[in-house]
Image 1 (cartoon, rainbow, N blue to C red):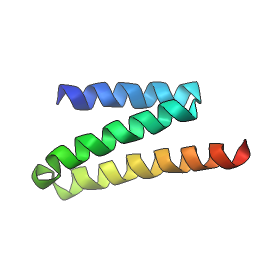
Image 2 (image 1 turned 30 degrees about the horizontal axis):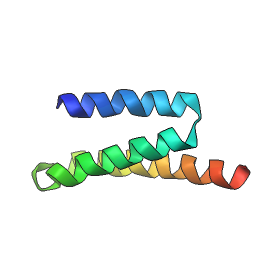
Image 3 (image 1 turned 180 degrees about the vertical axis):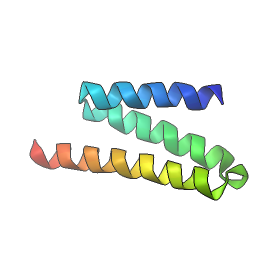
Image 4 (image 1 turned 120 degrees about the vertical axis):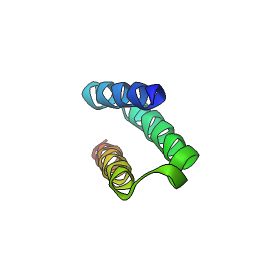
Length: 67
């Protein structure tokens, strides 16, 4: 799970920096992490991935349309 912790650190940093490119990169990393182990995750873990990805997507889209 160290890669998960690393991605969470990247997520926090990306959200604080405000850089859309960084958010997109983190979203891609989270998606890769999810797809590499989805068959082993519980429903609760899948819901967490969904929440994180939705949050990032909303931030990316709102930034894209405001620029």
